[in-house]
Length: 221
Image (cartoon, rainbow, N blue to C red; front, side, top):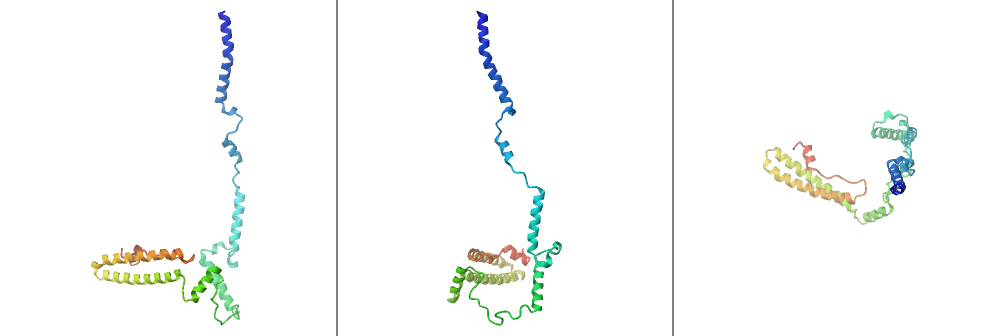
């Protein structure tokens, strides 16, 4: 009886032991899995980096385009171009040669006043607005503000020069008050410059004043 019970128990435990060993071997051997990981699939989808030959061809095309932008006198001479001044010099030489050969003689409208009523390079709506202001004796806000700022800067520089002269003549007792007033006026000027730069057309912005820079010009730090 005991032998029969033992044999039955072994038969019941044998499948469980097999399943445990099978699951353990499956979890211990990740290479046995047939499902690819996300990183592996992404690696397979990555495009290979461009070859050096493609980069070289791209560089050659870029150089050719830049070469076409140069005047004919400077093409094929990369060592002759050190700055924009070299290109400007070539342009000026061509203008002078054209003037000497008379290419600018007998041009249409020669000797007549220029028609400045319209600006072909400006936006049509903006050009119309400026023309209406001009006909009524007015100017855009940024033009009036530019004049005001330049006048304030001129007055400030005059006062600054006078204060520096008083300081060099041993009137140093007033320098602290003068410098405080001058710095306050710089703040007022820079506020107007900031306002001007917000409303002025692109490319016409101006820089404000800097106290340390102004002192550095006269070595008064």
